Amino acid sequence: MAGKVRAKNNRTIVLNDEQKAQLAREIAPAPDAALFPDEAANRVFQGDCMEIMPRLPDGFAAMALLDPPYNLTKTYNQSTFRSRSEDAYRDYLASWMPLVKRLVRPGGAVYLCCDWKCTAACFEILRQHFIVRNRITWQREKGRAAESNWKNACEDIWYAVAPPEDAAVFHADAVRMKRKVIAPYRENGRPKDWSEEDGGKFRLTGASNFWDDISVPFWSMPENTDHPTQKPEKLIAKLILASTDPGDLVFDPFSGSGTTAVTAKKLGRAFTAIEQDLDYCCLALERLHRADADRTIQGYEDGVFWERNTHSVSSSARLRSGTEANPPLT
Ligand SMILES: C[S@@+](CC[C@H](N)C(=O)[O-])C[C@H]1O[C@@H](n2cnc3c(N)ncnc32)[C@H](O)[C@@H]1O
Image (cartoon, rainbow, N blue to C red; front, side, top):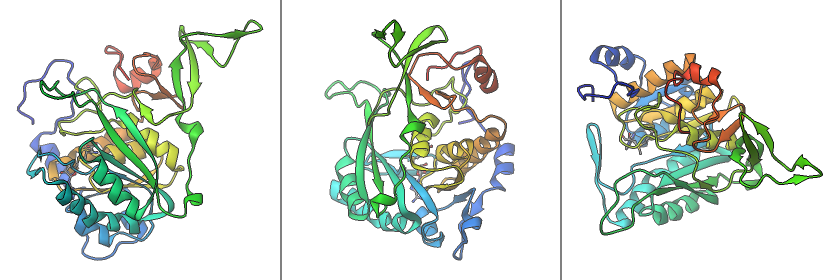
């Protein structure tokens, strides 16, 4: 990871051995006894989530973000997850979903990420433990075109809640999207539901379950790491803002580079993260430190999500995030 030759403007977070050794001291070891909520909060645990989850407190999470390995052969630094039959993948999901269920409070939200290949198994296992409320499709536009099949350009995120459903929170106002107006209609000479700002005409629209406004993290973005399946902060921010309140705790048992924990912190929520790989735990901790100085979430500003490529991030936010010379595609 550290040995790659990178372009001049490449902002990928890379840690040297000394930094890793320093950060590794902050990783929480797998607990050997049950933890109280304040012992579990705002920590990155290293270990197998199936062994750590039974030590976490009942109902301590307002939201769980589940981004497990998909049913593909994929190497995560030191370990490789192997693709398996659909039945075996279903068994894999079924082996840990009940552990998650105990940790989510009544009405708490559960988001489960997957691709087209494992979405059926995810839906089936999720609905055995939670009330499924929706499926978000994220058009993520990454990956090579396949010659013998359609290019895989989207992912699913299943949205479910722990019963009872009427205890669920959903803050539609917190996840509105600012879109460019194609046909700026006027009524009595006045703009109808749109406004003119930053040299463009924009409308605030409610978030739907089709997301085409979020790119994967790429090398010129300050959140980027070498984790092979890192989720964008903007995507996680939408989920957290819709389903939690400030101060709530967001739980992520497959934390990877720490996107959920970092985004939760930036938005004033608590977090508990579990990741098996030491290097990824270090990346998460480095990102959490950086979040102390910079709470910017690319593509989210002034309480709204900006449509991709609208280039409306204010210069102050760009300066804060250091992207002034390299305006972001959000
Ligand atoms: C799809 S990635 C998650 C990426 C993450 N959302 C991010 O933004 O970086 C899945 C992660 O789960 C980790 N993992 C897989 N099995 C695990 C287990 N049993 N316990 C803890 N971590 C695990 C992998 O090392 C990998 O980093």
